[in-house]
Length: 114
Length: 410
Image (cartoon, rainbow over all chains, first blue to last red):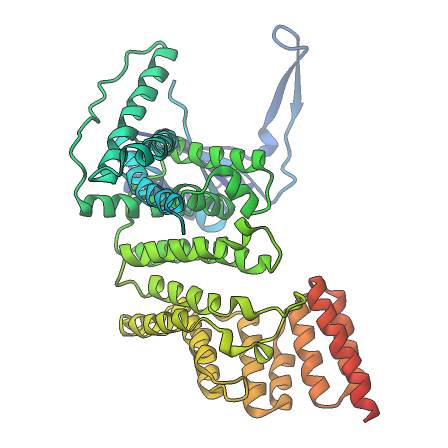
């Protein structure tokens, strides 16, 4: 059965803060309703906590870290789910129930199985 | 039509049906397409020599299946894998209802909303219409390499994202069907907009679209959307040859020679509108209503004798399902014909959001012209000319502007 990564793009907020309790509750409800197809997933701290890692000169080169990226756009990657579904139609139906899709967007990508 | 054409058409039409089944059996559009193409080439080589087989579809199916198995085995060897037990050899031809369902699956897969509209159009022409990649590219004015890439990408997405090969469930059907109809309508408009003197493959897109709409009507004879779509295409197409004069200049509906409209196509289209309206439960379908409007024009003996009351009423119905500024503009034009230019102009001026639409300015210009308001009319003509129209349309507007000066002198 195909597996999809659902990438959640929403306002760049800190979901761990108490003012998002209502949203968090909605995610818990989604998690219970879609338990059969959810194979994993997490919420992410905002992009301000992100660190970009690059190795200059390729493998074995200098490790360069930088702060960010800071989102230039209104929406940022703030979470993900792994969904195991029969086909794209089912994955889309599940993605439409993720609260992120109601105010932001959810990108559904098939996962390569080597 | 020569014997060779008839044979090519038979191979193409049966090929689409064989393809539909083979996609289901192999699970790959790409593989099925290669196999059917190979079988079609063989058929065109051997049938003229050995005579037509008793069951051409079964012949094509067996040939395509053999080719598919060869391709699967070759791919397996290349990847160093054991060939999976290929259990798709079943020489018995598929019963007609299975072929019908397979075709429907192919329709809905090619027009899946997860594919870009331009990819849907390309896939529909390639797989359902049976055109070659080169023909699709020429028809849509895209370089062949670009089209090949677009088709490959679309087929890869179907496989990799697991777009299902399935007829949508009843509750999804209206939305999905609207998507299929939009794809076919777009194909028609590509051909319709091409105009005289354009590449024959390009103008032939109108026939391709009608052929696809006929296939849909054959597969779903009770769906108003499908009947409305086919009716609309037939009624538009009936006027095709009268839309330009001998010099290739566009003619307005009022100027077209109605004796040259295709009476047979009009008869079929009008009957189909009736059938579609009878099958419309409560919520009217946009294509059916547009076809009803086209019927009013098709049946009018002259522009002046058009039943504008009926046209305006149908636009009122259309606005209940599709309220867009362009449809409001078309309704205002019909009101102007019924109640005079002042009434029409008041409606046109009340429509917001069309400042960038050349036809809004052109319509205002025409109505101001009829009201003898030369200054504002000229200004509106200038705005229309400045907002991007095709060359023949620009010439038409310039002629009307020149007439404005003559009218003033009189």
